Length: 246
Image (tube, rainbow, N blue to C red):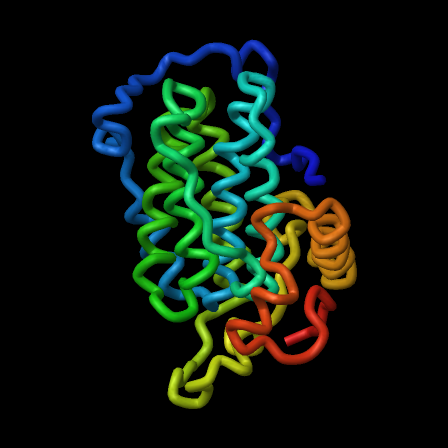
């Protein structure tokens, strides 16, 4: 199971103080932050880098509310989101009942998960869903995080690193009409350490993380991870859950 990364450093008293507006009847309508800088920068990134950024932004929301609820789903979804950065087909379709996720803690978690899911699982087919998730998750972070300045600083540094290391790649979807090269088309693999502004580039270390998250999700029977049967149904070939460099 994932643990909180060092760049998301929130003190207990910060997390326990909910000083933002939340109305379940309005939900995302109250997110007034501007995600323009993130969207503009993400257009210059490989699709895999955009998915990694979605996973990283989602983790900010998850860890912001850590300890304020008893749900296991947010962390499980975060774990499978990282699996989906390896191959989007690893995340199975899911819905969380809206009526069961209410209030200023579970409400934002529900919104974040529901925008993340289509981006991670279908974003390679419908890129607009990735941009919509990047916008929502960025604005959600600006709305609910106790230290927005720290979040903005992290975003600036990570976007600059991503533009340098994982630029936009040419892609022709007609080269893969039957989705047999889904993972390869996303660009080189990117691990979680790529989101650490203080870490030096360490491709082997990033691959260790990805191998571990695939193993952990499978060993724990994560309910959001696609089963081998699910993968066969969508035309997945080869051995699933095994890391292969794109």
